Every structure is written in structure tokens, then in C-alpha cells.
Amino acid sequence: MKVKLIRSPIGCTPNQQKNLQALGLRRMGQVKEVPNEPANQGKINKVKHLLEVVPV
Image 1 (cartoon, one colour):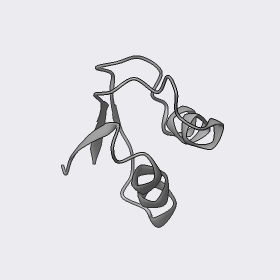
Image 2: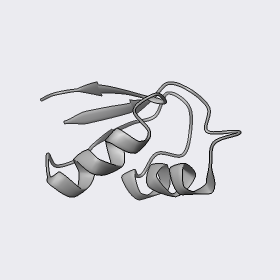
Image 3: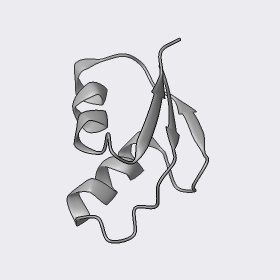
Image 4: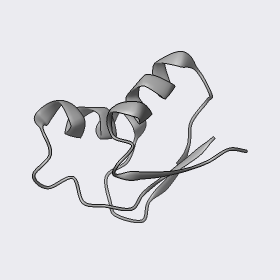
């Protein structure tokens, strides 16, 4: 699945910022393709208000 960072992580908790880094997202508008695994789904669920998810 593809994830796109659509909102800024400024003001988020450090745990949420670490989840974004673990997904490989650094800049606004950046798109990354991540495997559809339970670990990645949990990370995405923690920061779903900052992301746009597109299933591939």
C-alpha cells in the first residue's frame, strides 16, 4: 500500500513522529510504498490523521 504524508507532524507526540520516521516519511507530500503487514498497519493507525492511504 502507498502512504502519503498530507499534514505536518509539528506538534504531534514524539511517539507519532517516530512512527512516521519508521514508515520512511520525512517531508510533506512524500509518498512511500510499504508492505501490507500488521506491524505497518499499526503504525499507520497511530498517525492516520496525518496520512492518506492508497491500497495498491
